Length: 484
Image (cartoon, rainbow, N blue to C red; front, side, top):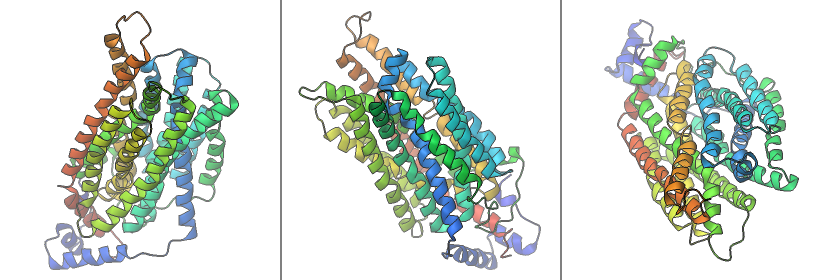
């Protein structure tokens, strides 16, 4: 069902829906002005956003703790790059497969209870997995962690969208997604530092579960679970799951931005998993450089955090400043960010063998440009989809972006790297030299730079349809809102 068809059968509402009458236009403009006025935000709403940000922070801390100690994991389980990459792939596959289930439930049942269940699940399985000594069982528990995280990531943005509208929503979503790069960076830091202090990398996995237990209590008690469409005063009712999916597939802005975000997920998944390992190999090839993988993970985590601290709010600020004067600015900002990130990351990969600090500077620039899109993509996904369909839309985007993005990119890079090691080694039967390991991983990571360019093109294509699709949603909400 298309958004434009969701309307009661009254003459005034039909005027708004068709948009071909001065009265209809005036009514839409009046409603838009009313919703854009900043209302007083209650303490409970601020607290709800704070809780969601806290949980998102530890969510991504948990996700990338293993990446911070990947060298130790490979050594203990005696695995190569391909099986190390498979650990993240198992996590993401479980995450994306269960996202549509939680999306369906999130549009129809208590979002508070669903999220509390998910946080409890991933906290418990992370803690239990830290005691496992068998690679296969460790991989299985990483998959269970992915199931728990799917419930939270699918639903949390829709709660923010139901509490706020306009520029306030953009700022709150920016705050929420601000936790992704910061949490990812903290994951590297917590994993490497805790493992180094305890003398066992497994202790790095035992930090976030305790924070997760606190998060469950916060979700169940003070957090708000608003009515769907509350901020927009929408009275649109939920439709069938089949109609939801049909509408999303026909929504060009949503589909184009989803394909673009898939490229973002591909790049971030591969770089987050293999970045520290690659830089470590490059730096250790340089003479007079003495560095450990723990220190390198710490440095990489700090760069990731700072890039997120600056990039996410910068993207939200640019989007808020430009969108009123240039309605197509949101996808253009995202596209330009990816097209700027690609050459920066390419140079970082090329110069890692000969320089110490310059690769970190270039990685910072690449991640800063990449982080411009986090809050904006979420905002676009919300305002081109009607309120009772947003959890399903978020789940659909998670499914597509992870299925063709970071579900396979860590494993794909690992497989390409292992294959190149055999090709580049003088004697395939012998252990590849450190130079061969570095070169193989370098060539494999070049794939991410090409994918970034493709993602930038998809975002620019989104700008062709974004205004029309947003107007469809505004009209659908207008004909069912309390103002009428």
